[in-house]
Image (cartoon, rainbow, N blue to C red; front, side):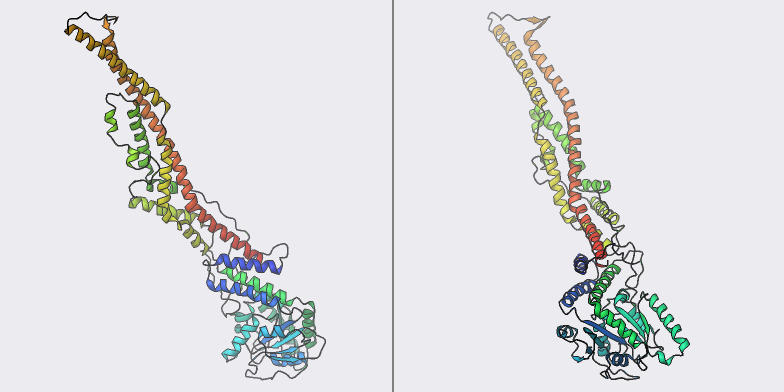
Length: 555
C-alpha cells in the first residue's frame, strides 16, 4: 500500500520539516537506524540546497562490461574514460563538466576530484562515470553506493546479457522505486542484437522495471560504439539540465523514501514484511519502499480512552475505599451519638476512638490505611493491562508497545496519589456537623435540667420532712407530683430523644457514606485520568502526529 499523496503539492521545505519532526517523534519508538537515516536525509538536503542549483550531477552507473565508460566517452565526445571489456577499469568516479563555473563546491561535496571541462552547449551538466556496481573491489562498490545516494539524476546502463540480473534490480532499482522521476535506464550495446530482438528486449526490460515499481521510467536503447540512440539520450539529459529541477526532485524522492522507511518500520502485529534496510545502503533483499502496511498514515484518529469501571473498581479496592466508606458511616454515627446522646451516659461514647481518626483521615492527613493485598495489586495490574490493550488495539507495532507502556508509566505514583485523594475526599465531610445535632443536644440538656430540677425539688421536700419543718406546696399533674414528673419525665424524654437521634444518625451515616463514596469515585477517576489515561492519550496523539508528518513528508 502506497503512502497517500495530498491533493495539494507540498513544498520541499515543508516536507523536510515534516520528516525531521517524524524522526523526532519516532525516537525510542522505531529502529534507530531508520530514525538516523531520516535525519541524515534532512541534513543532506540542507547541504545540497546550499550548493549550486544551476548544475545537475548526472551519474552513469552500471555493471562490469555494460559499456558505461564507452557511453561516457560518447556523451562527452572525449576519450576520458578508460574502456575495459571483462574487468573493472574505473576505480574512482570522474566528472565531465559543461559550464564548470560555480560547480567546485558541489563537486567537493560529492568528493569527485577528477574533473574535466568539456566544450559544448549543455551548460550546467556534470556527467559522472562511476565504478562498476558489481566490481570485485569492495572500495568500488562503496563508491557507487555513496554517489548513487546523493547525485541529482541516475542513468543506469544495462547490457543485453545482464539487464535482468537480480543484483542490479534487487540491490539498486527496486529500493529506488520512489526515484523514478530522477532516473533513466539505458539498454546499451543494442548493436549486438538482431534488429527484431531490440524491441523485445526493451519491452521485457520495461516489464521488469514495472515490477520494481519503476513504471514510466524512460528506457532508451543505445549503442555507444555506433552512436545509435546517443543523441536521444543527450537530448533527454539536456532537457533535465535546462529545467534545473532534478536536484529538488531527487531530494523530494529521498524524503519520500525516508518516510517510507520509517513507516515500514511501523508494522501491524499481523503484518509480515521482510526487514527493510536503508536506501543509502541499497540492500539486495529490500522490498519496494512503497509497499507499506495498513492502515495508511493520514487516516489515523486518536481513539477515545476513558476510565473504565474495572479500572476504577480495582483502584478503589487497592485504595481501601470500602473500608473508608464504612468508616465514614461509623464515624458519623459515633459523633452523632456523642453530640445528641443522653448526657448522663454520652461520656462513655467519648471513650471510644473515632473510626476515621483511627485511620488518620479526619483532617486530610496521610492515612494509615492498610496496604493493598496481593489480590488487589494483581487486580490493578490487570486493569492497567486492559487499558493498554484496548488503547493500542488500533495502533501498529511498535507504537502499540509504547502505548501499553505509557498506560503503566506512572503506576508507581498511584499509591501516594490515591492516599491523598482518599484523605481529601473524606476530610471535608467529617469536619462539618449537622444543625440538628445542636437542636438535639440543647433538648437533651433541657431534659437534664428538668431532671435536676425535679431531683432538687424532691431532695428539698425530703429534707424539710426530715427536719420536721413545714413542707412546701407541691403541685401535681393528675395524681403525680411535679418533682416526680420532672425527674422521671426528663429521664424518659432524654432516652426517647437519644433513640430518635440514633435513627437519624444511622440515616445520616448512610448519606455521608454515599457522598464519600461518590467523592472518592470522582477522585479516583481523576487520578486514573491524570496518571493512566493522560499518558496513554499522549502516546496515541504522538503516533497520530507521526502518521500525519509521514503523510506530509511523502506527499
